[in-house]
Figure (cartoon, helix red, strand yellow):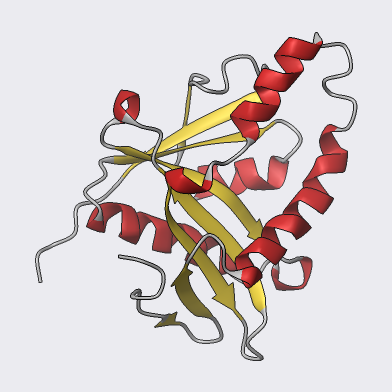
Length: 181
């Protein structure tokens, strides 16, 4: 289902909407995430050979054509406050989709937006026939690790393309099958 065809799902104070990866609101939230998270890892690759640093950069980038779903959450004023996406890593990961770029704007943190985003990703993954969700985060994002563990993700070994990123923390969660309507 493309972003334009996806229904918006309301909650008590939030609206969940599936959009295209290129949606300007989604892009703005990814930029905000980069601005916040980037400094946490500043200098982390300073002692790494240039070719390894380039491979790590490539591993952490997201090719838009691999994205199968992008979700945003807006508040009552229509402002986008949350973002998450699902990526297909290809045949090596058949049955799995990868969670990417989960971000909640500072003013919306602690309000349930991250759980809402993750629940929507699980719903979409189930609709797409995925058997599990996987994700990678870094060791300087303890709030992300805490969220994933709270909602039932378990640690797994570092998987490709992140094998050279020693500070990676990887997780998985089985996707619950949805009952036929």
